[in-house]
Amino acid sequence: MSHTSSGASGKITAEAIRQRKGNTDRISCLTAYDYPTARIMDEAGIDLILVGDSLANTVLGYDHTLPVTLDEMIHHAKAVRRGVKRALLVGDMPFGSYQASIEQGVTSAVRFIKEAGVEAVKVEGGLKRVELVRQLVDNEIPVLGHIGLTPQSVLRMGGYKVQGKTMDAAQTLIEEALALESVGVFAIVLEGIPREIAKVITDKLHIPTIGIGAGVECDGQILVINDLIGLGFNKPAKFVREYLNVGELMTEAIKQYISDVENGDYPNESESYHLSDEVAAKLRKARMGKIA
Image 1: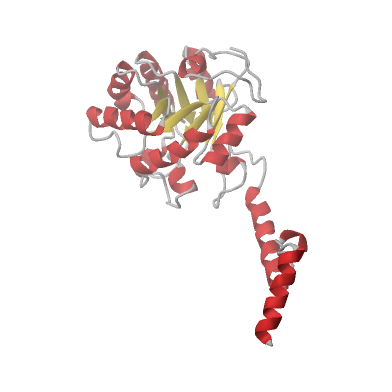
Image 2: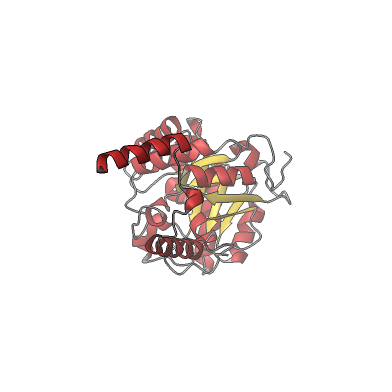
């Protein structure tokens, strides 16, 4: 398919993403959690928009992703859906929406699609998620895989740590990627793994890899929008490139607003509504008459 980074036409599907494997035209992906952000991304030409469970800490103020619920994810995904026409819209299956059973996972994914209008779901985990992914794909639900540093495993991992740093760990990641490919994921997110391992996985797979802290050899890249525009409150990870600091711009604007209000400089004459001369004259007479 043809593609440009400046708002190319034509709806992007999961299958279209799959077919971009090995294309020099790499896949651009970002997270979004609301209508205006999603619309701006979509009109700018982004390929894939993920309503990430990072909603928990970027928008809802939680310390990590675990507390966010499926209902909260669906609520925000519905808003994002209204802003997206071209990009592939993917919903992130939150912690607790699929751990109990495969049946729970399928039910949650169906809700995501029917209620929020997402076009695919993302599931964290490798070998443990193979059967769930198989069932989702068998039920006509496109799945984006996610291995490496999986934030929903933060309690077991003991923090957000780079994965795959030993030969055994690297081999496990390769096996997980191949297993997910075998059950039908259309692409796999590789998060927080050494660049060399990401390259091996990318070369072995027949589906695209989408990196986040996994080096440049992946078939695409994804970032959390808040990190990209400097709208976070924590020190960004090593792999984050801040393209703009919206937080600083907002702080400057808000401080100026406070100053203008306190000094009586806002609103000014041009920002105020006025009566017509005729009505204003009548009002003055009425006031004069009342005073008299």
